[in-house]
Structures are given as C-alpha cells and as structure tokens.
Length: 209
Ligand code: 0WE
Image (cartoon, rainbow, N blue to C red):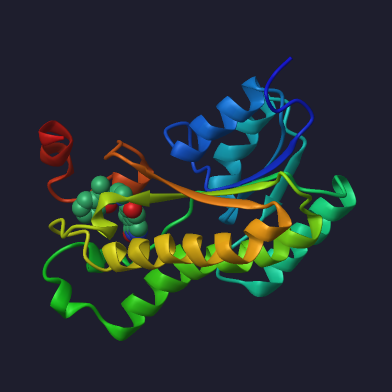
C-alpha cells in the first residue's frame, strides 16, 4: 500500500519526460495517487498524453495559468471528475526568452509583469481555485530556485519572480494552514529540462554545481 493510495493529485507543468513535474508525477503514481495532468497548447498536449497514459492517467486538461477562465474550467472539471483535490503541484514558470540574458537592469515592464504573473501569481490563483475541493490534510507544492535568494548571472527577472513565489508560499501557508492545507516550495538544483534548454552558460553552471 502506497503512502498516497487513492489521493487525487493535479499536476501543472509536465512538458516532457525531462520535466521535474514528470518526476513528481511518477513518484505520486508509485505511491498510489490518481493523477490529472494539465498542458498548454497542442505541442505539449501531444507529448503529455502518451506520457500520462503510460501511468494510467485518464484526466488531461488544457490550462494556461495566466487565464482565470482556464483555471476555473480546470477546477470545475476536477470537481466533476473527483469531487476533491488532495494535492496540487505547481511546476510552472515563464519569462520572455530575452529577459534571461544580459543585464537585469534592462528588464522591461512587460517582461517583469509576465514573469511575475505566470511564475508567482499563478500559485495564488490555482490555490484559491483548488481550495473548495481541498480537505484537511491536503497539500500544495511549488518549485523554486536558488536565484530567488542570490544573484545568478542571466536568471534576472526569474530571480525576482521566484522570490515573490517563495513569499507567496509563506502568505498562502498563513491563510490555508488553519484549514489543514499545507503550502510548500522545494528549491531544486540546476537540472537539464526544457526550462533550462538554450540557457546561456547552463552547462557550465551544471558542471560547477
Ligand atoms: O526557473 C528556471 C527557468 C524558468 C524559465 C525558463 C525559460 C526558458 C525558455 C522561464 N522562462 C523561460 N522562457 C523561455 O523562453 N530555472 C531554474 C532553470 C534555469 O533558467 C536559467 C538558469 C537556470 C538554472 C536562466 C539563467 C541562468 C540559469
């Protein structure tokens, strides 16, 4: 019997078999959880469906976390399907490609907005939408990175977004803890995923790490 037998887990952020979210999906499945996977766009859907089907996943939902309507539709579907959500995995981040190189001081207003909206506010929006389906003992988990705490070359606006994300975790935990809902972040090391693909100097960082 697994640690998570019959728990319902929704995972945002599987893009391919290198995704940290995919490693989380496999671990949750191994422990007996039932999974729902979300995706953005046809390209990701084409990769996520076969992966999920390999774990017996039956629920695939389109969800761009920068859209209130898509978040509402996702949790409406989960409400119908499961009637509850025990685990929410937030493994989503986005900054405009050009913001992840050069000087942080050159960050555009729009680039700043997009990075913080997609990478930090999305946790707040998803948590609020999930809450009516959560019971005491439920858990919310997100992914951070060292660039939240220290200056890392080229990480730039994502560092600010991850700092905001970590602060969101503390404020959400304050709000939801009394209802028995835990909120946590794991700060991963540098890992070769789609997210780090094409990042200048990543190979050297990986080597140094
Ligand atoms: O949080 C991240 C990266 C998140 C990310 C990645 C991309 C690449 C493609 C956000 N937005 C985009 N936008 C794109 O267009 N990491 C922890 C991985 C990462 O990114 C870096 C790193 C590391 C490590 C960027 C610069 C330096 C180190």
